[in-house]
Length: 503
Image 1 (cartoon, rainbow, N blue to C red):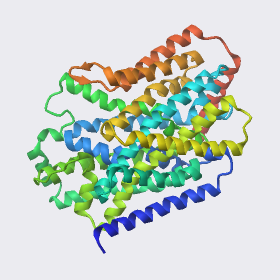
Image 2 (cartoon, rainbow, N blue to C red):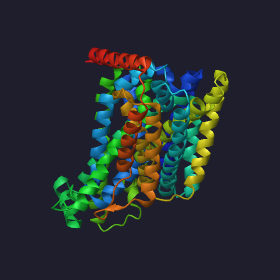
Image 3 (cartoon, rainbow, N blue to C red):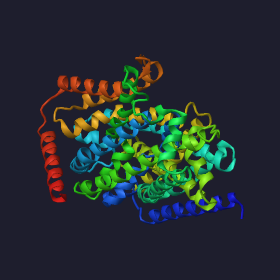
Image 4 (cartoon, helix red, strand yellow):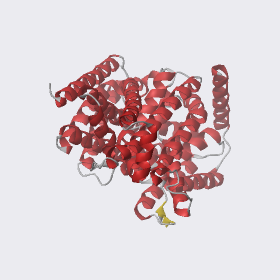
């Protein structure tokens, strides 16, 4: 049996398992709310692993290790910022968002929560935020399709577009019918696979190189700065701006719909405590593994005189060099898991944005069955549009993900935080800030000035502009509303009671 036959066998088993889980979820899904939010019944471990797997997309096993391979530990500030941001998100946002979305007319999407929380009768806030979801998630899904195409090109020599179609086809097979529950259950399996792969590969690679001491010496021989979090012995202005930009990825967590929707789907606010512990532990281990793979790859390839044409393929190539073909196939499946878990989650959020936040605004009396069909149709359409964008990618996987991540973080992050923790936010303040944040990300991405020779990550100015505009406009447009005040107090009390019980 050839090496490729072993690898294909492992992938077929993986694909069959994902489709089987999707079919099971399909049998458990009977209405629109179940398709979009799994009836708000996710247990803590499912919510935690699902949030982690849908968050850590193809960039975890391709983009981040590639960046570490090229630049060294200076790029690890992304991982540090993400871990800090995720912990804050689980600690403060998750319990209150779960409670508040229930109080605010049982909101099942982020745009509907904004509208219900702020009592926006114009529907403008819901429509604008639904549109932002569709725009940025189309770019985000497209970046994952790029990762899928690159994966199959390396692993099996298939044409880039053919590989992309295979990934999209299998992901659609379980997402189209299984909905949110299907995406969440497959995320648990995929998250476990990613964790095992990122722990096993660096351990075997270090052993092959002679141990930690020899591996570190080999990296130093190639470039001692690769082992520095400052990219050198001193911290200059340009390096400081680069570190701030990398760590600022953590700001994005507060506004990522495909992640925070897992908070809304938990059984109750009390689940956030145990889910946080599970989720952050998983996240820390996978990020350490990804960083280790990129760094060890310097010794494994560059130190040995081997070439690596595409740094983003360092994990896949090391697996091929070190492991039995059947195990390599499982590692490949783990890479696909990172890609597919994110794509499935994002397609579901796009579907909910279109159906719940755009279509139902104009056709509120539509039947549940019709909404279910529309939701599945939207999943298919977004996948097709994203696929067309991915045919000719305009950047690396990490660059494409960074843009979409900044778009959501700067558009929704301040709005989510202010909705949950500030009574004074108004619908006009949230709308103005959201639009200002989104526009700033686009403008800064295209024309942003360099600070000390380094382009500041667009999420920073976008987040700051959104926050400032939201507060100023809210101050100018605020009018007392007893119902809004009552709901705010009720949500705070509910979240506190649940957290107290959990601890």
